[in-house]
Image (cartoon, rainbow, N blue to C red):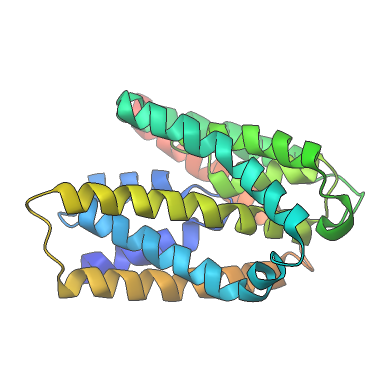
Length: 252
């Protein structure tokens, strides 16, 4: 139960912050030797995060019916990472680059890029300035998040800030883009689970979904409040510090 709580906390918090959920889950599972980080738990954690972002942005999702243009842009921006991700998973390429050195370098480098993009003073808004071109650019940048340590949320926010969107709207773009991505991950994972003879719905799966949902919802709510007032520097500092620590462990 403690392992489920920790993994749910890490997934729920880091999925939506610009710090990379996959790298934290990999590191924690490896060094704490958690046994519950299997496919069933992994899928459950992503389902919890998916439900949280859907519930939080339920009004925006309903508005998609009236604003089909925004819905199309969100879908277009999400397609590149889903298509490339599916291909790389089938080729088993993702597992090939899941190592501590890659995580260390990507955590450090993309932390610096986050800092550089956050220096923008222009404040574009998603409702009036999120064009199809912006969606395509951010969508292709999200492909980089398939590399452990990059962070899907981080690269989406970095891309949006580089395009001069406000911090709040950059985060909102990132969160809205997470909906189709998390949906695809959840469906793909569920499909694999249902094909597996070892699948068995258990109490731990339900608890994983509930915990992940709670931590994800709280993170989304307070992160959006935070960046209305403050910069992203705290996340930049954290990424640089964590990246350096990981590289020291990897090379020493």
